[in-house]
Image (tube, helix red, strand yellow):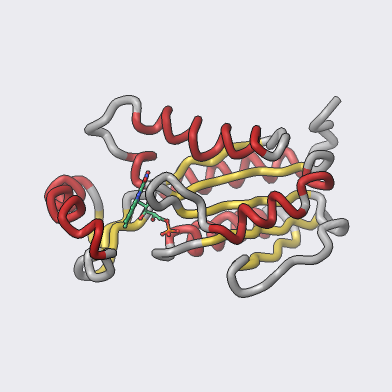
Amino acid sequence: MSKALIVYGTRYGAATSTSEEIANTLRQKGIETQVVNAKEQKVKDIAQYDLIVVGSGIQIHRWTGEPEDFLKKHQKELAIKKLALFVCCGSATDKTKPDAAEKARRKYLEEKAAKYHLQPVALGLFGGIYNYNNVPWYAKKAMDMDRPRVAAAYKEIEPGIYDTRDHNVIYIWAEEIAKIINSNLTVHP
Ligand SMILES: Cc1cc2nc3c(=O)[nH]c(=O)nc-3n(C[C@H](O)[C@H](O)[C@H](O)COP(=O)(O)O)c2cc1C
């Protein structure tokens, strides 16, 4: 049986539930999958995994520290493994800025892979969670101004909390990864 590891970092929870959704899809496809919150647990050895997925939420254009530390620490081994990266971020689904998603893909995913000389088999750009009950003080004004846009466009999953993700996009992405892992495709021919 193939084995996958998902390592993620989050601030508001989107990367947690996204990781779980990816894991559920991989498991449905017969792949044994472990999910690790990089803030709570350090992964020492990745030799046993056929696929590694590393993901983070984005805040002020930055990943969380721990999954990035993971990329750095395992850089050499990840370069010769099947690796997929994903981020959860507001820009992914911000329809008011036509080039926001494209810029986010480049900045948050492609540049991150390049920084560590990695060649992922897949890059996932997913929306995020806006939690107006938990806003950093420095972002309050900007987020309050943006709230009507968010409230009009996205589902309020709990009072004051909006989910901008399209969960079908996550499912399809995870299915694609499962195909790659279950095939004998060579990542770096
Ligand atoms: C203070 C703050 C700053 C943010 N900065 C960005 C940003 O620079 N780019 C972006 O695309 N989304 C940004 N977002 C949206 C987050 O990416 C979104 O909340 C996402 O769910 C974060 O992932 P997490 O829930 O796993 O922490 C920001 C959100 C907050 C609250």
